[in-house]
Amino acid sequence: MKTFTLQLRDATHAETVADVEAFVGQDASGSFSIWAGHARFLTVLVFGLARYRRVDGLWHYLAVPGAVVYFCDNALRLDTRRYLIDDDYGRVSRRLTDELLAEERQLETMKAHLRRMEDEFLKRLWQIGQQGRGL
Picture 1: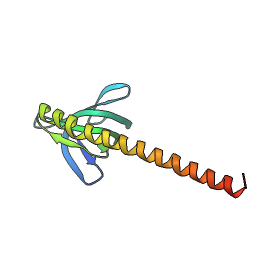
Picture 2: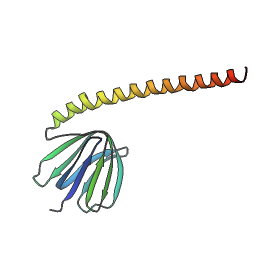
Picture 3: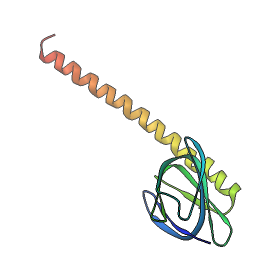
Picture 4: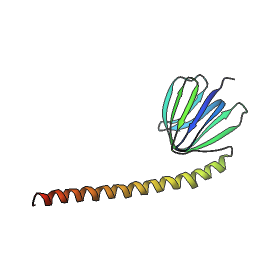
């Protein structure tokens, strides 16, 4: 059976998985699969689980908070902020819910705080500009 290479990269590390037979993921349009020899392909995975199968026939599950996937020259590159890998679907699913979803909530809270700070900063700059005009 033909195989390809899977290159996983996140903010802190990278690893290469050889002898991958198939990859299944989900983007905004739905589920898709990639096999060795696939045409050049680029998409963005949604938050959730993907999976890949090596020549040993076992599925390995990959939890991601979204990722860019690029397949070219028989290599699949997956770039994400963070990923979790496990052979047990239930365990990786729980980790996805517990860890990655919690991180997403923290990021959203932090983004909201930054937006409020930015709004206050711009408001203050506008006030200073108005005072300088004598208004």
